[in-house]
Amino acid sequence: MNALGESLTVIRRLWTSEAPFDFAGEHVRLSGAFGSPKPVQRPHPPIMIGGRSSPVLRVVAAHADLWNIAGGGDIEDLARRSRLLERYCAEIGRDPATITRSIHLPVSYDDPGTTRNRIAEARDAGFGHVVLGLPPFYPEGVAGWVADELIKPSL
Image (tube, rainbow, N blue to C red; front, side, top):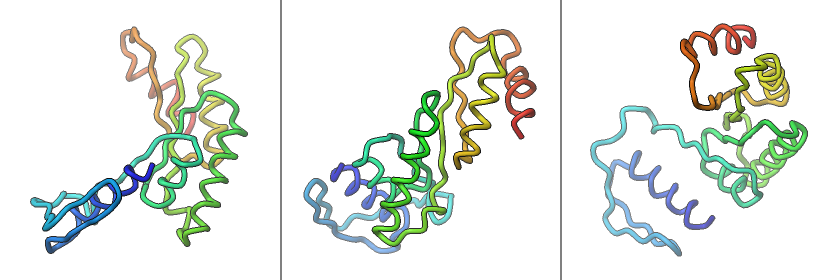
């Protein structure tokens, strides 16, 4: 996880630094590094990190704009992971509200009500960003079906 943290530090600096910089970490070493052209998004593109382990959540607390976790299981476990992230944010003095909680939920074509219920549970647990995992093979008109059966009723 240290290598990921160092890499994210360097990437953010490449995106935002107006002058060349040096970086001497345990895993990453750069001299005179400068990123050009800069990204269009300001101050930089959002950084999303996915995972549920404690070491990953520490990296999320330090570097991520969005945190994604695979859902579909026990929502209370996911909520515990979210609270652990909040604790790690407090330890480093970061406002946990600056990290968008994102969840990946599997979609059931046969039982959209179950998917809608999982979306509601996730939103109630503080997950404001939902990624819907559509299993292949996609039925005809799947985009309209997702909008009508899952998204609109969940708003």
